[in-house]
Length: 298
Ligand code: CO
Image (spheres, rainbow, N blue to C red):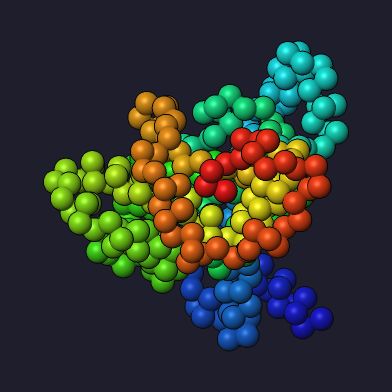
């Protein structure tokens, strides 16, 4: 009742104030009503802005929905069975781990179909052993979807890599993340410091970061376990998943393999990171040693 009166008084006073631009005290409004007036006024402004933002959101989504419907129409015209196949489930051969950069869309880069690629993205395509999100994606992709290839993909003009090359505070969370790339720089400091051109040094760090993240993939138990399993299985001619280090250049659209031979480095440091004994895995009774061209690096 009191609130109702207060609201009515506030609305009246608000209307009066709006038309006359006279302060509440000047028209004899009590302190309580004046407070209600301020609250009411604030609430009205908030509702007005919320409504405006909602309208803008709707407009943004409408544009996306229009694009989506056009794409559905075009896709159905090109292949009337496309969505039927998509609804049947996924069986991708590839796990893509790449940067979150909006310019890097791996499906477009390699013209791959929907359903062929399982995806994880983060800033600067890092493989951090404590990243539960990444480990969950890897475990599902490797143990359940049984992907055969991991495409660890970096890109030139990477904001994360650039940030790691600057001595600047970018906040505790981003600093902590980017520190992983600074560790890569430290490992290759002599080579990187010898490159005079800033852009060339950035590009080399992009490559070295990709190579280091490939090594990090090989250190994980989920990758090692599956590679040992497939190595012991005669149904596989190689050990899977294969790990590939790639770099994309947004300036040209070209995707390339990293020149660093991280597989050689992986074999050199494998003693340190090997988690399984080869004998832990049952060799299939039909397997004849030498009958298959197994991966030499395992
Ligand atoms: Co990036």
